[in-house]
Length: 78
Ligand code: SF4
Ligand code: SF4
Image (tube, rainbow, N blue to C red; front, side, top):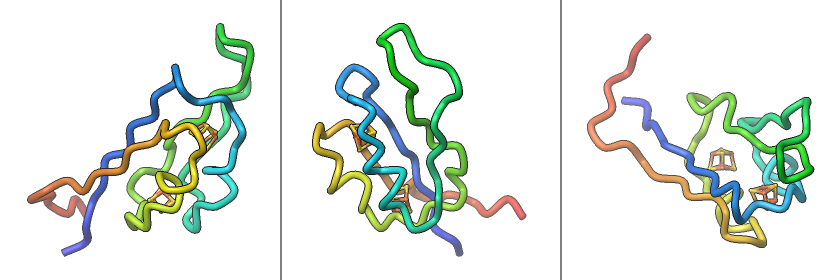
């Protein structure tokens, strides 16, 4: 069964360096088109189903703003 993951981004800690966007091998993240109230374009895990749980984003985020967790007992939807 395909593993599934949950990705949490702490937007209070993220400083929009976009390292996560660049390192993700599955292009899971998108950058918002508009600036948030904090003055930058936030990152969102737009293609969460494509995540393979490699943890590159979590490990390389300089602000510890990403948490990737495997969803236990996830049932494949396809
Ligand atoms: S690597 Fe971390 S700080 Fe940089 S954009 Fe991604 S979540 Fe934000
Ligand atoms: S764990 Fe890997 S595949 Fe999943 S979002 Fe992070 S970098 Fe991309």
